Image (cartoon, rainbow, N blue to C red; front, side, top):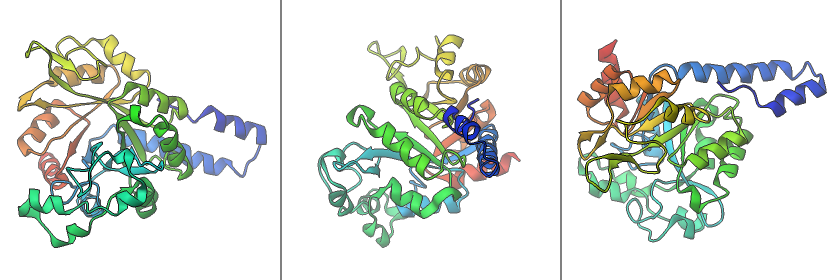
Length: 314
């Protein structure tokens, strides 16, 4: 388990100040409380309550919080002028009326886009005329609105496209006291991204995302970035290599409707002191199955459904 950053501890020793001690103790307590809470089941609102409203908009985030989600999940890219923007895709076409890559547009250009009308067309059963006014949000926007009252589950997207992403993200989280207040988890498919964040601030809980799908033979499962071998061949050493920098793993449960992990995978991860947060589960029967297997959290587009399943289990 991570401890307070050495630099902070050294600063206290050098200053010999008693006035800072209560504040530092409170921060340590908050970090410890977050880690204790992570040992319990977590409802992770995938891009907000994105089953009901346009993903990564106020509508989706506010709905998720109203439904009692433990974490708001945010995907982070960078604009051409270096701003951290909440959007999943590297390109704009799917969720806005824009075109091209996120990184090719300034923040002003991104803010001018309609980020909600697509949802009304794709999901008429949940359509709302107000969604047509939805705008893309920066990480600054989200933190300014919710502050330390909300916990954030942030993914570094396409970090190879943004070499400065990790430093910019950690600097922002530290400046807003979100690390010290136990309000953030960072996830990524990129092992290098997580390792860099761990080096920048070892107090941040990290989740190594995993994507299992068939390889060239169409049968043997492979992990997308090569972080682990197939679930059938994964060893304690593979999990321990992840535990050197991360607090847990975030695997997919299904590939084209078929399970790629099982209860043994979860048990083995737990045996190596890793949390297991599975994505993205919207079906109640699958939620129940994974709860029975002992997962520590689920990503879902429908936080209310998961809350209902949890209430049934009490």
